[in-house]
Length: 272
Image (cartoon, rainbow, N blue to C red; front, side, top):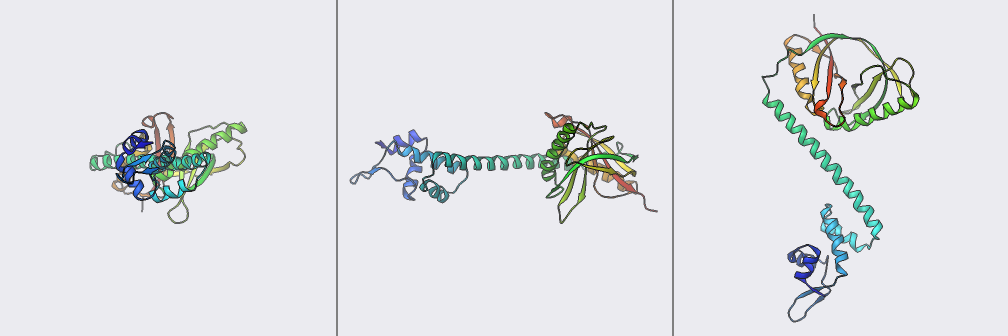
């Protein structure tokens, strides 16, 4: 048997925490001295303590922890539950990291307001292009929603074309269309001369008679910088934009988004 202090040391928790667990009935001492009130624990109770701490660290409330440990799940069942919760937390961390990058990019954009030259904007015609593509629905046009939809689409597209022996003949293109409500249909496309693959659509992207274009260098999380430069140029030169910009990948580095290069192409007209 161990005193509360020794047991806390073995379990790497505080004695105060053990007293709290005792008070709420989550982990009772094996023995309580009736005269002194001292608590004593057995080595077998470390098993329950390990489960309590693991579940608590994974974000379960103490009430949920009590229900789970009292259910006397097998080690394999508990392991599966913990792995699922671990995956959920990892996804939350990834979303949090993505939001942080987005906030930082927005702050840099605010700092540059009024200091974004529009000299890099080029007005040109975009020829019609035949593309093979896959599409899916994104919850919104927000970069945090678009990326997780678009990137797997390109992976699946190139995999299917490769299996069918179809070789792309141009740079990958992403384009977007409004769907129901705030949702957006995301298209991952690549130019092809002939042929397609099972489950891949063959589409003719129409000509853009006039498109305001800009080359964006760097992470797409900072695409707002280039898009707002386009907006300023369009307004200053008396044009109107139509729909979403096409995004043409000119350079892609899987390991370093800072090396990415894209051209944004947005259709425009000049009112009479």
